[in-house]
Length: 182
Figure 1: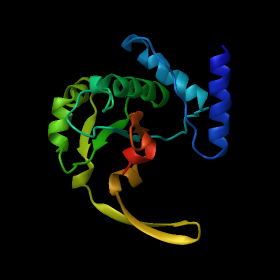
Figure 2: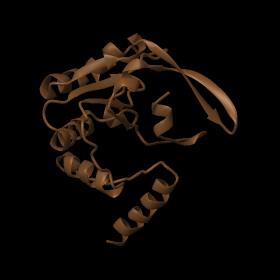
Figure 3: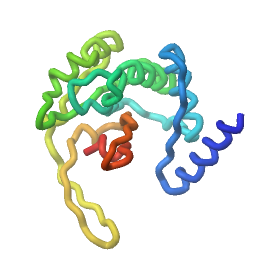
Figure 4: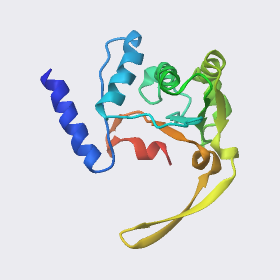
């Protein structure tokens, strides 16, 4: 119970900064759906009304399977889909998205890593963000304007779910959510 309280306190601190985060440990894949619900509860996620389109962005950085520790496990994405449908209804337009990389083509990654099978079973679409129309956006950071382009699909979605793979690396120490959105 103390661990849960510590996690909740950390979540509350993160939420104050505008970046709620929760970590939930599972012992086997049968606990995944419950863990997703628990993680959402820990960040006090409240479903908004009128969500019709959902975009889920797993981390598929290469053709390595989830057992390598480098990519998001399709079982986790399956559990997220199930939980989101319980919250918003069965008629959601759900897309699982990824972008091509220098050494990886999304179409092959989806097939090799089990996402094509997931899409068929869960009746969701797979989408390559590299093929989307890019829309220019501008933000200010520390008084400086930054311009960048964002795939239109992400801007049109009612709900965007980033599912990064927490990794520990020798030089970088840790990678997290923002890198998965690059």
